[in-house]
Length: 299
Image (cartoon, rainbow, N blue to C red; front, side, top):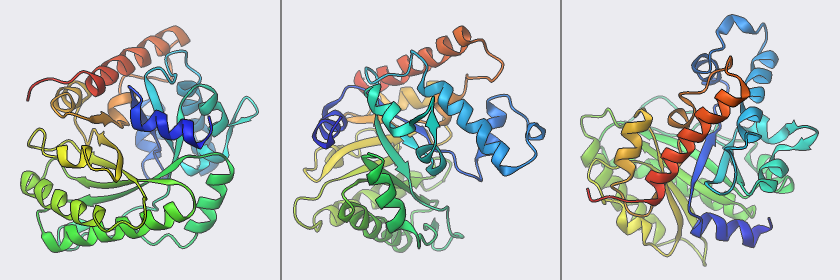
């Protein structure tokens, strides 16, 4: 797929984006969910080798194809790796899946009810490498815990600064200001976030377009103005700690939002499964998430 084909697939494709981007801090938890306990590796390299095997098994499964999975977000090491001797982004594109790369380096301590992204001093080099490997876009995550307008404005400002750097490198940013779904101020935070994003979109230069990865709003349909905004290529939803049935039920209430789930996609997969069991479990998850992304219900 060339850039134009990938853009069309992300903008119009009937499907969802798989989040396969667990990084160093979250890898042990992801492996444990997969049935691999922490004592199974003796070094960081072995740990990353195990998570790469898991991701490779997912990507090469017959259930994982561009018919229902239109994109996949990768961890940096996965992007730089290979499957059967071929670069992972090439393997994805051959299956009709558009590759993205997680670029943030984790979160700062909470201030004003939010956690900003840590500095990314080597971002330009990473973007150049990603572009050279045929990656389409990036994903960068912040967290919002409270309905603090000053904090939320700082999150959106930082996100759009990074987005402009990504766009300048020829990639499409997925801006991810995650609202904590356990927050007692979730609904109010959603509304402030909507306001701040709309203001930031309206001053984007030229004809630049971004993507948004948002927590499913407490009020169904709240993000419709973002879905319809001409500067937004696609709005995708994170599962945010919901189980897959919960996440799918909530997502289905929101027009135009498609999934970009991680835990909700992977929660039934286990290392000890036969290939047949693994493919069946992954296929069931993909079918359920695809349904919630493409068939909407009244809130």
